[in-house]
Image (cartoon, rainbow, N blue to C red):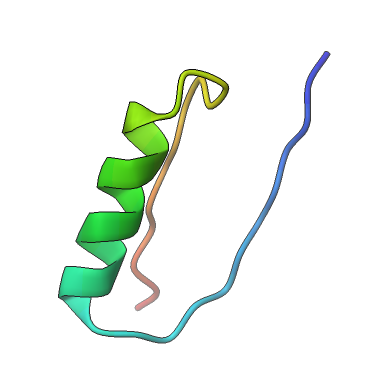
Length: 38
């Protein structure tokens, strides 16, 4: 049971790193996965 989201973003690597950092600090977010398309 949970909420899942798929987000397609086009931005600088630093922005992705900061987003991942912020999500990991949020106690409501249990898991994240950042995937770089080929």
